[in-house]
Length: 179
Picture 1 (cartoon, rainbow, N blue to C red):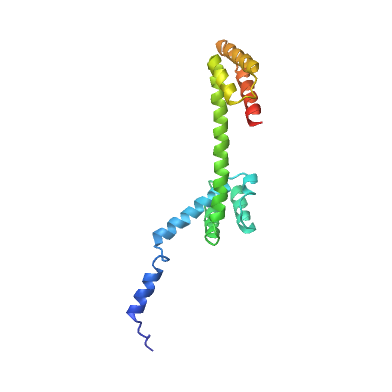
Picture 2: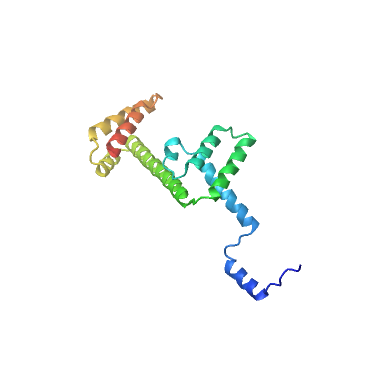
């Protein structure tokens, strides 16, 4: 029994309409690898951060199992592939957004930490002008405490002692600035 002949005009119109939906093998493989990387970033999150990620129980179980597997073993690679396969069947936009929020929060806290470190170094290595500038930026700071910490830290630096006063100054700045 011969197969019915297909109309070439209908086939070409169908191909043009679905061309945007059809992906090459390379594109499919790249998407698969991207989803595996997303799964790997899920594995690297702490348990409290994982709790903030919107995912179903099966995916969470797969991620938790991957965390228990040693990274040098073949089983870990296969578990990553399984997580990638599971991710292909889910909408990953919410997961990507949640990971982005977690990463940006980490970057924000790192930036705040760095800002306090710079302020501490300015107070220790600077003169009265730097202390006044710090107080103008953060009015709750105590001028006398800042001067005292600065003198102690400079003295400890000169004597090659551990920077106890610098650490105390950092804690003080952190408490006052972060509330």
